[in-house]
Image 1: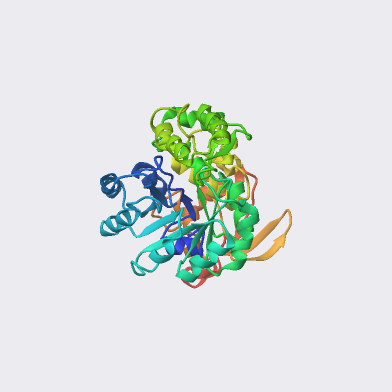
Image 2: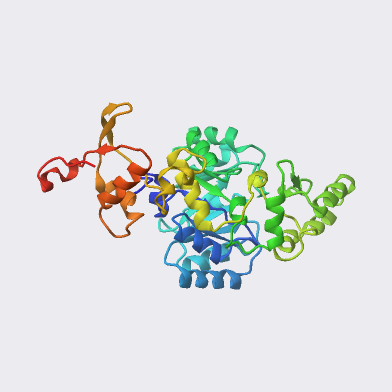
Length: 397
């Protein structure tokens, strides 16, 4: 079964879940990108500040690690941005996210229909321009996000962008779990992008001390620096951030401020969390553990589908040590509250319900399903009309 049947983001990117991992500079390499894609999302290598040789090596590593699709995030202010795009295309990469400059308006159609360029937009006007230039999908990013930010918050901007364009919209900024995903979808998004949540993943290449600072962050520990040099960035409060803000208030020489800001993210990611810029979003305050990328995606998606913050706490999962079974139905045919519910079901579209327990099997053994129901005091009667002729009548669980 496809849990997100008909979702345009899944169809366009050929992925199982409409969950993208933010392509954060100096933090997202092939290891994280491949882990996210293998888990059903869409992993992205962050190329901001990187040399061509590094990008080529990471693409080669990704090819050895996985057969799943990955993408690249390109910082358009980098002088080698177009060269990175072209060398990536030559090596089989077909999807790019990009922002920081409107150069993408000229690039969207440059490489043909086989290449998908997804712009990051921070206003309704940017969204309209991207659609007019031929973008098939956009990422609407709010100022809650870590690193480079815009001026508007996601949940006020997102519905305005959704109303202004006809193409699907991915929401980014301040999303770290299923609750954020549900809120984004309620406002019209068809996918989400998470960045800070994946910083606190086992596969992320930033230093362990950087990850610990994310876990320690409180709700009020994020702040914005680099405003005066027109490169506003959200970071976690530390020694460097406080010193920079103090200097910015009294320094009128922008060249000095620019020099002070140089390579600070790289420094934080690799070695020095006091002297570097700890870029992370406002959502860092609710992240309290480091997990595998696959677990992050699974909990987010299952929580979204089950409409619970943590679907792993359900009664059934206490007895089935797998993913909790999720049964989607086409139509409720008869409902007797507290007694039974009879529904129609197309098993071909709900294959994941069974496949998650017995990969490759077309159906889940009835004994296992009924055992789960009995242990959790659940009674479900589901007709299998699709097989009525083949099985000689209407069957049900």
